Image (cartoon, rainbow, N blue to C red; front, top):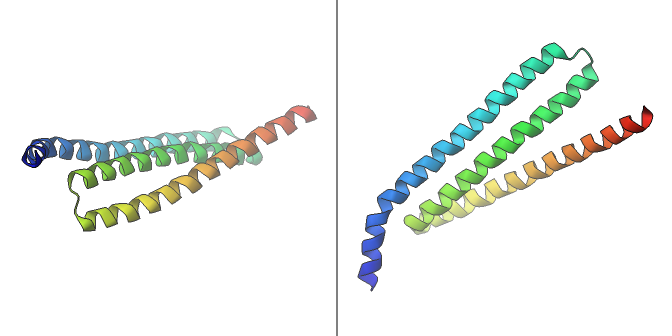
Length: 133
C-alpha cells in the first residue's frame, strides 16, 4: 500500500509542479494587472480633478483598489506554497513555508484591515457630505 502511494505521488508530482508554476505566474499577472489599472486611474485622476481634496480622496480609493489586487496576489502565492510543501515535504521546505505563510498572512491581515478602515472612512465622509447638502 505504501508503494502505491509513492507511485501515485511520482506520477502526480510533475502535474502539481505545473500547477505551482501556473499559480506563481497567475499571482504575478494579478499584481501587474492591478498596478496597471491603478496607474491608469491615477494618471487619469490627476488630470481630471481640479480640487485637491477630491483628488486625495480618489487616490485613497485607488490605493485601496491596488491593495485588493496585492492581497489577492499574496493569497495565490500562499496557495502555491502550500501545494509545493505538500508535494515536496522536506523539513527545510516546511519551515520555510511556515515562515513565508506567517509573514504573508500578517501582511494580508493588515492590508485587509487598512482597506476596510479606508472604506469605512469613505462611507462616513459620504454620510457627512450628504447631511451637509
